[in-house]
Image 1 (spheres, rainbow, N blue to C red):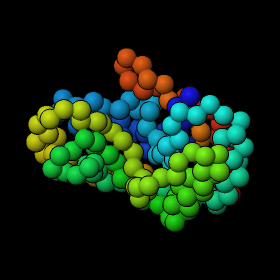
Image 2: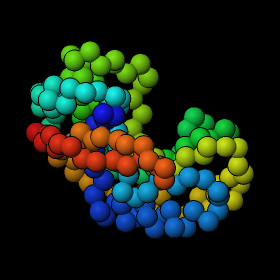
Image 3: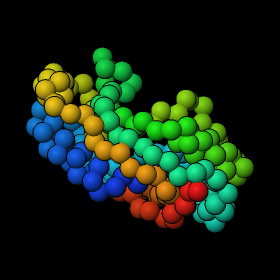
Length: 179
């Protein structure tokens, strides 16, 4: 089973991002992520069969609840050769602590630790081939606001991911409270 941990996005933020995508989508032939898939990953686990072990270890994570803002737009790996359009995430140190603790919890089971610096974001679209994004860039530049909301993070989730013809489908497995 392909697994990851993530923070769920509340409906009010999801609605603002849905309105954003409605404006941007006609400007570029790229693959837009469905709103149902929007989340903020804290740890990619990968294929792992021991669900009980993962749940046990994630249950040891102790991070206080914290505030998080979704704001700004950016490109991975860079603006010149974009492969992903994302909404930025700004949060207190607790978000980094959550990432580190979920990484350590999974590491105790033998799941490889992250080697890259943690860069929290919310993926809005993937750019699979070299397509022109000039109109998309122009539309982003014309936006009045790129603040999508602030919310309190009181839990994180263990998710399963399944590849299907129309794209990945995510399913929440278990919620882990913070605090």
